[in-house]
Length: 330
Image 1 (tube, rainbow, N blue to C red):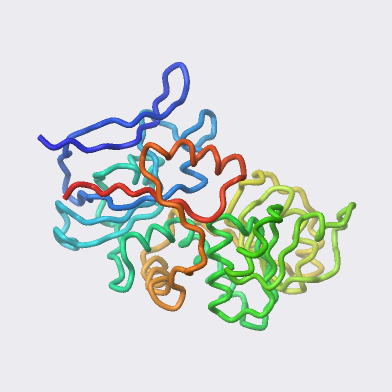
Image 2: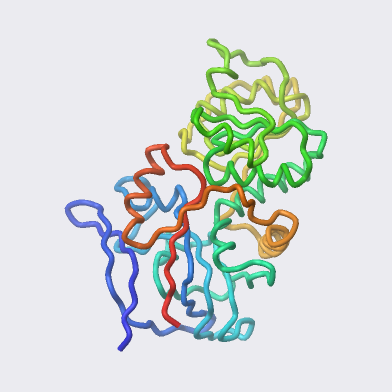
């Protein structure tokens, strides 16, 4: 009987990860079985490998909030054996076993058929990070973003930030500012689309005011916490911020003045429960006009390297996007 591999997060005296083998599972009505080709390492996946982060409530669990692969068994009429699909969000890797496995069972309604112009590897190069960035930029477009807008991206060297830079470049935005503490990544950020790169020390005054000089029409914030609080006073009248990350903390300490005196909007971006319509629209866009940038830093690893990569990500030392090659046996 063929055996397959998966990463498991175990909780006994401590929370830790192991790689274990398993055999092909049965599937229920409405489910599909996917031979996983690629998954990704996202901030939530990194948190899932640690104790007391609130990501996982049940153990053992296989993390991985995204995957791409081929259906090898289906009990849903919408999908056939051989279909290439991708899955992001919902309960994957959080409430039920996720993408860091050579085989995975998921509800068919979670699946998006892979656009013809997109390979499984390209899909997971985008993964949850790319989809989240696409949601953020799309939300800003709905609130008035055009090629003439000035936009700030926080946490720009991360996966979401990097993709946001790329998408804005494809739209043709002429003023795209990347905010990053990583001074050695300025050339990389410029290649992705930034027209200016600033460190927090260069942008923020020693004493933050409720209202600062208006500099940006729109913001994609991937950090949250204090960085977000310091950015809000710089947003132009009627501008909007798309919030899609909390690496800098979940608390937001600010004043109401930017919102009631400048009409600033906070837009929450949630990729987990995005509608099927949003998913179809944006994955088609990422397969076409917003295709994977050649300049993106992408690392490919296997299951044995996941925990080390998660540590790097949580330490704030990770750049670009890391994907995990599973090569689920067909």
